[in-house]
Amino acid sequence: MSNVELDQTEDAQPDQTTTGETDERVREEWLDYDFAGETKLSATDLDVYYGDDHALDGISIDIPAESVTALIGPSGCGKSTFLRCLNRMNDRIKAARVEGSVELDGEEIYQDGINLVELRKRVGMVFQAPNPFPKSIRDNISYGPRKHGDIDKGLLARLLGRDDREKERELVERSLKNAALWDEVNDRLDDNALGLSGGQQQRLCIARCLATDPEVILMDEPASALDPIATAKIEDLIGDLAEDYTVVIVTHNMQQAARISDQTAVFLTGGQLVEYGDTDQIFENPRSQRVEDYITGKFG
Ligand SMILES: Nc1ncnc2c1ncn2[C@@H]1O[C@H](COP(=O)(O)OP(=O)(O)OP(=O)(O)O)[C@@H](O)[C@H]1O
Ligand SMILES: [Mg+2]
Image (cartoon, rainbow, N blue to C red; front, side):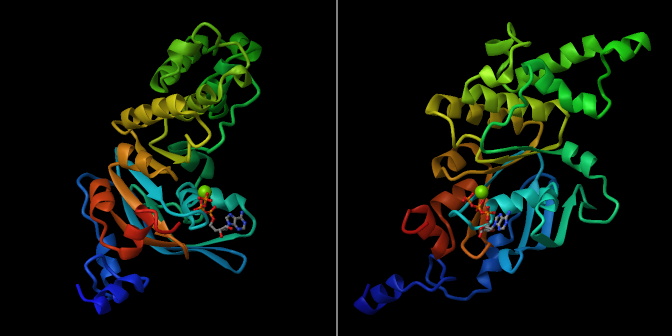
């Protein structure tokens, strides 16, 4: 390679490919990804603004069912903003304005009249910091189903002959087992959830999310506050969940993304989705120079 070519490599243009082309149109191809399986979620031309701040710039992506999709990228590139678009959590942020489309099983979630409680039941969310309710372990699990009217208990329910105690017991056990927490807590279900360790609290939050029987689970850096052992447990759990659920996970930990995800979407500064594909391809053979630089730690 001549010096001139070396200089060109060092001055890589923003949309340069790893094979040296500079045509911005190729970005479309990096996003045109044919995965096996059904599409669960589909975003098209999604823009999000916070006031004048353009946080997401024309995101279009299809997310397959029953698999793990990782969202990676540097801080502030819009990963959490995108995740919140998928169950309309941005509606709760006053400054946020969302334009574009998100479909769940082919149905537009940004249409007027959509039932947001029902949507968030179908598309559940687990946050970065475990946030159990200051209630018993059992009540943390049964709170959602009770709110949705799926479980009835208490004095009035008993008087009316609608006491679902057995149903609750089964639900609590099933949810905790599915979240790989049952063995650690089954003898203290009436203890306050705040007495659990951080890793246990996070699995309890996953169990709470599973209890409302979601189809999609959104996770925003669910293991970033945990030690390596608790993180490994969450990672194993995510792998198991993908057999039945569509998991979309934001992570800053690239090894984690590589370990647990089937496909990876790379967001970069400016709120752009720059490349999307099989996780192996993204990590071993990215097509965008910017993505390669990010993954190899040259910036970010
Ligand atoms: N509630 C908010 N109000 C105003 N601006 C916001 C809000 N939330 C996010 N932003 C801005 O939108 C951009 C994207 O933020 P976002 O939190 O989505 O990034 P991120 O990729 O999740 O970052 P991190 O990896 O640090 O969590 C940032 O510039 C951020 O400052
Ligand atoms: Mg974030």
